Length: 130
Image (cartoon, rainbow, N blue to C red; front, side):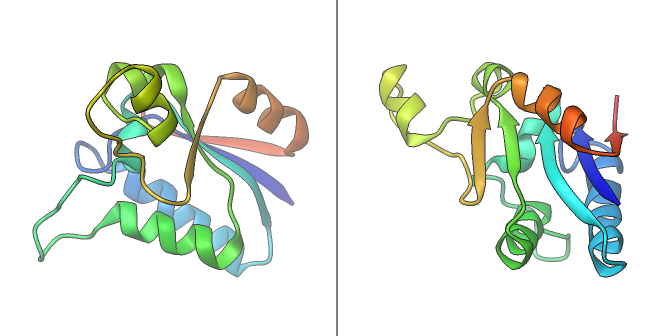
């Protein structure tokens, strides 16, 4: 079965982002396909390369990146939500004349149309967070 996931919460503010990651791992281990993971609202913080959790906590961003590399996942950060929260690619940082970029490798910025596309191309959309 083909799934898409929508993650609405930041990696360390609620259990939702961690649950989404675990759910993705289980899906892939069972042979299902993940068409896209779309990060929206505070969920865009899952793609912030500057997040630095303490050593005794799980680094969710690094784990999303590892899963992306292993399975070639499409990890999409909503560009409008990201800009509001200061998550910028190199291109957006230059365009907005900001001093630095912080979009983590393996993630890409795109519009809400990518969420609509994910719904159209998936058999199930599972959301995490509010």
